[in-house]
Length: 221
Image 1 (spheres, rainbow, N blue to C red):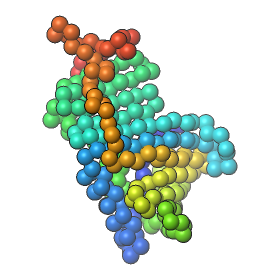
Image 2 (spheres, rainbow, N blue to C red):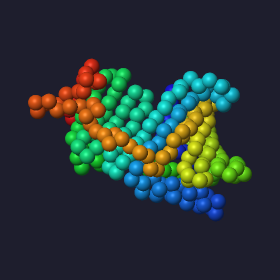
Image 3 (cartoon, rainbow, N blue to C red):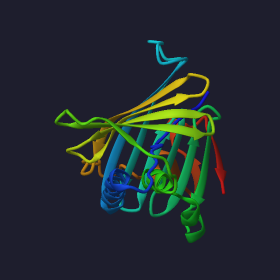
Image 4 (cartoon, rainbow, N blue to C red):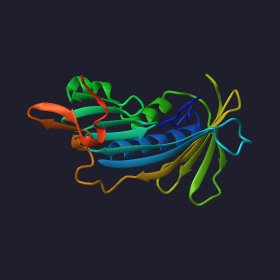
């Protein structure tokens, strides 16, 4: 099973059309990196083949960012990073790993939204414009000879200048579709959106889990 998070498998090469497409990707990256606040929600579905109507894998993912604070959730795993701590929450394993935020920890963290755009710009394939007739969406397709990926269809929101949907077709005919149900560059976060007190508390000088996570093991890293 392939679990896809924020991965935009689009490639660019030389030539007028490809350079235009590359500029669009660079603009996406600049807007993402330059935004102080961001909230992205995705729906991920994987099918046995493009003709199958019912997915055998169905999952949602959320990514939030405010300044240097980050949060993501997917497949029972959460990550919270604020000015004091880096927390990894593994619900299936009932474990919380807590580290104090440091320069060393910062070097290990990669913003998933900009990192994938960076990886796109390092690959070279020719995108084909399939449809540009709609007012809101551009549809591109890229044929691949890369690992197990056969082709990728990318649907870009012209107004928001971001991806609406990505469809991966694999060599074994499996189809994976990521639909971006929300892309908000100015979300209204709650006051304690990135507060570690959702998971851990300090009592009498000792760190412990909150009542909600009382059955979780807390490991200090």
